[in-house]
Image 1 (tube, one colour):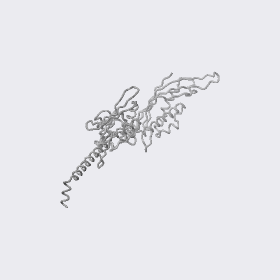
Image 2 (cartoon, rainbow, N blue to C red):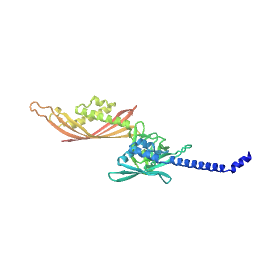
Image 3 (cartoon, rainbow, N blue to C red):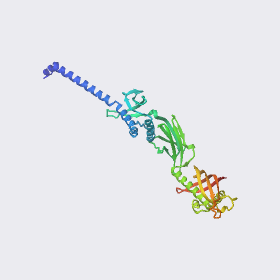
Length: 378
């Protein structure tokens, strides 16, 4: 048996088999290398991203992004940027170039052409390679580092919650620490742009508009004053408007203790004060030097340019509302039977109304009212 094996080993058949085996191994290695190269090509992902851009499918584009830990990439803000970019481009034809490497990162350049103007723009899509062993095929995520601002810090009072553009921020979005009763949010990166940044609690809020465009930017909301949060802003605004309407209805009707107006106020002393203020407004509307003034009625009355500012006093826990507005009015008599004539006069007024609200079991309660008016006759 040993002699037979030696003869086979020395024969040409064995040599041929060895050569064929070597060729097969080389072909297998080559095929494997070609497969790895094929599945490692990032062009497919870049094309998917670009086609979504062409079709204005911004949700798909957002899902293809590389969202690293600590990076806050607002979906609404991203879609807004992409929509504006798409609307600014006319793409009649395009050419997809082979991927290249820049600083160890894949880049696919797509040349977009506007046939009408014979002009072109390049869209560079940067991709990060993600390996998930034991899978041989990598994933590619679109890198938008060039659209991000690094290291944003936001400071708010401890106990408040932070929202950016209406979205509550949690520890999944930023690194959160506390120091000297201040809550500190650190974002490794955030999409550049204008944001409404708000910290709020059950009743009140602090707001600012921040243009996030610089690295290492800080937004400190601990130094600004509180206003009502969205819920109580709506409540207060409605209450102020309702109070103003009922107040001037009482003054026009010469009813200084109007029941609907007094229903706003629980405190008897404040009711008397408001009643006295109504009398002062009545004397402004009905001019005492007019003959037969008791026969006049306010026939036209319009409040204009109502603006309210709401501040929250954290010590007294009251809302202080300052409202400015102006109004025009006309007073007329009935048609005189003996002359068929209507007597009238007109005036205008600038007013500043200050109302202090306390909160009682979540309900607003008027604590104080001050009204300043400057009448002008026409």
